[in-house]
Length: 141
Ligand SMILES: [Zn+2]
Image (cartoon, rainbow, N blue to C red; front, side, top):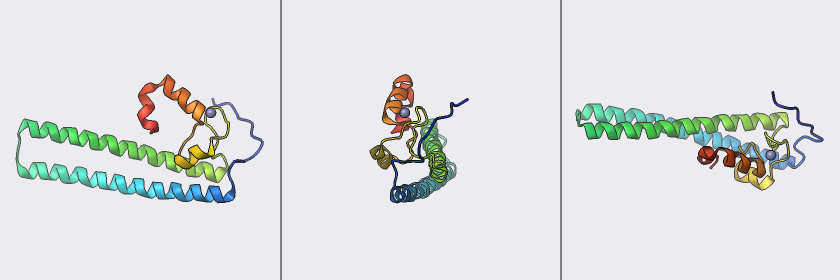
C-alpha cells in the first residue's frame, strides 16, 4: 500500500506553458521510441534472414548472431520500458500528479524534469535508490 501524500496544490512548480512543453517533449520522445523499436524489430528480422540464407553454420558466426540478437532484445526491452514510462508521465500530466516524487511526494526539481521528463523521483530519492540498488544505475541514465 502506498501512503496517501498530502498535496497543497496541483503541480505548483509548473506553469501551463511548461506543462505544454513537457507534454510535447513526451509525445516526441514516445514517437522516437516507437520508431526505434520498429527499427530494432526490423533489424532482428533482417539479420536472421541473412544468416539462414547465407547457409553458414559456423559455430562462431552463430554465437556472434546470438550475441547480436540478445543485445538487440535488451535494447528493445529497454525502449519498451521507456515507452511505458513515457505513457505514465503523460497520464500524470493529465491527472495533475506530474512533477511529484513517487517516493517522498516532494516536487521534482524543474531542471531535472527538463533534462529527463520521465523522471519519477526527486534527485535525493533517486540517489538514495541508486545507492540501495547500484545495479539499476544504468536504467536511470
Ligand atoms: Zn523524493
